[in-house]
Amino acid sequence: MPLTHYVTLGRSGLRVSPHCLGTMTFGDDWGWGCRADDARDILARYLDAGGNFIDTANIYTNGHAEQIIGDYFAETPHRRQQAVIATKFFGSLFTGDPNAGGAGRKSIHAALDHSLRRLRTDYVDLYWMHCWDPFTPIDETMRALDDLVRAGKVRYVGVSDTPAWKVTQAQMLAHWKGWTPLVALQIEYSLLQRTVEGELVPMARELGLGVTPWSPLKAGVLSGKYTRATRGTDAPARGARVTHALTDATYDLIDVLVRVAGELGTTPARVALAWVQQQPGVASTIIGARTLQQLDDNLGALDVVLGPAHRAALDEVSKPVLNFPSDFVRGAGSIAYGGTTIAGRTFAPWPLAPADDAQRY
Image (cartoon, rainbow, N blue to C red; front, side):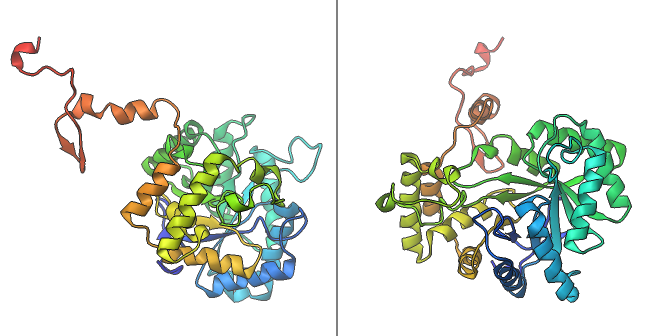
């Protein structure tokens, strides 16, 4: 699948690339990103390849990521209209100010004004709530976002890192009130983070939200650079976020990744990305890169086709433990549909069901 085989984002008319360029690594302000010049080269390479979807946030590298993006498009204004720029609100850049972050009307408007200034644009194509704010009624957030859409400062809205029940409440309010609905859901999703398959992914598919996974390589854990052979010798720049994930179970998964990559003649990172992109409900996977080599490797995942045996091996070694009632619902099919096939699924007879009419009261 080429980068130019665009997909519609959720239940909307917005067309985006199947790989979205994440920009948390734009700027070295946090100690593990890339310099501004390198970030501009990465951005240019992605756009030259036909990519159009760019994801950032007001707090990434203290606002520097947005500024790098803004400076690039100011120098290449012909590309602005072709690009789908998404940024986020919620995070605060002003310690001690209770209204500088969160999802209240005051903070949303202020955050967008600052983002537009750094991005050097009059509007953003997609505005994300970065995380659920339990101190703000969700109807206030949704109405504030609708006002921004009506004002022409925002084209579409989405939500990230929020419980399924709260996203559902927000979407139902939007439909009921005639406000701008959510079109996308951004969540952590990878072979090492599959618990989202219990509630969040099914909710997104039901409500018409395109899923855009972040950290599909689990901060580089699934990139192929960490193996049993190097265990205990690596000092990752992201520290505990990486080292805490390097467990025996993770190395079991990495072993399978390496094996599948070898059989397909590709890299473990590409296999991990291909698995995420080919999951039900996923619209565009967010990839990050500190170098052009990393970007090229990640984009190559779109050419990887996982066969049934490879998918089964990866699914089995990464099988998650989901919250109740996920397993119960999955196992209850024989009670309701025993002895039938529905939508391609065959259900075994329920052993406690009456065998004949005489046993039915």
